[in-house]
Length: 240
Ligand SMILES: [Mg+2]
Image 1 (spheres, rainbow, N blue to C red):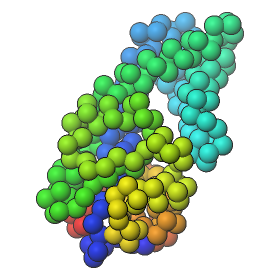
Image 2: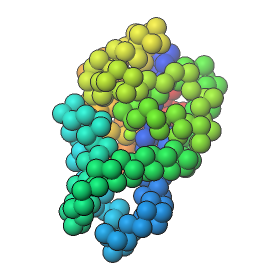
Image 3: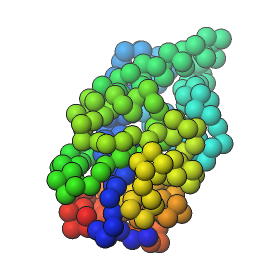
């Protein structure tokens, strides 16, 4: 369903790369990790480390969003595969992976950069009387830290994480779970998100309105049918 003001009460927003600048913040956390953990042992440069990690992480997240692997598998494998490919075959590899994941998520949760216009959009939506929810596939132990470190927690009414129920977007059950938690109905909800599959196609399949945020038009994937396209968060004020 395309979004319009009529009847909408709840605005649900994806967190990573819709509000909180995951792309930039994760690069910074990975750079910190490179120095703190002496990853120069395995990778000749920060860029080499980050590129290899991101490739591996992206493939694993595609499987995780589809419910094909567990969170624990993803958290270990994203480091194990990259280190193994770099020639690290020590029997302590699994322990090192657990350590790196904990360090990485700890550092990530301290970072605060928001997508341009994110805070202003939340303040605007509140001023118009909308309720605001977060709906995210991110991990419990880091998503709340992101909201706190970027100082937007007080602008959010409800947080729904896939971690809470073990079901990821685009599975319709997480959208239905959000409706229950907010005591509302699909027609009264709109989702704003940067992922055309998980956020937008998922939301539309659940009967929600949907606004696809293709930041600066950088994603070459087409806008899903039925969604409203924005390329900058400040466009929200002409829709809601
Ligand atoms: Mg996202």
